[in-house]
Image (tube, rainbow, N blue to C red; front, side, top):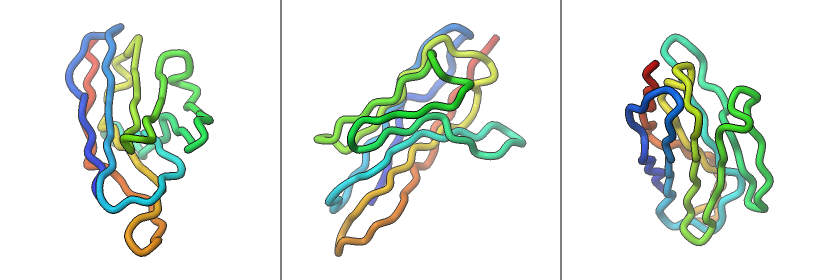
Amino acid sequence: VQLVESGGGLVQSGGSLRLSCAASGKIFSIYDMGWYRQAPGKQRELVAAVTNGGSTNYADSVKGRFTISRDNAKNTVYLQMNSLKPEDTAVYYCNADLVWGDYVRNVYWGQGTQVTVSS
């Protein structure tokens, strides 16, 4: 199983970015998918998560600015980030709680993608 992220980069304050994370491999089903971030010197924190039924939750710091969504047919989760602030600068990681192979359930992480917001 692999989770591959894309869409990070450098953007000015107030700008937008869209992150994508595609899961591949012999996957039978995916439960929750989420985005986390880790800034230098800080702990990794939850940004947003979405269940396989479409229910979402967000960190207070991103509510109203970020939107998480998923395409179950493509095993892909997205994070639309608008009105970005310098404090959003971090490495963003996706994760997925999924069942694969011989019906093994595990949580997998992507490799991370850098998001840098300049002031």
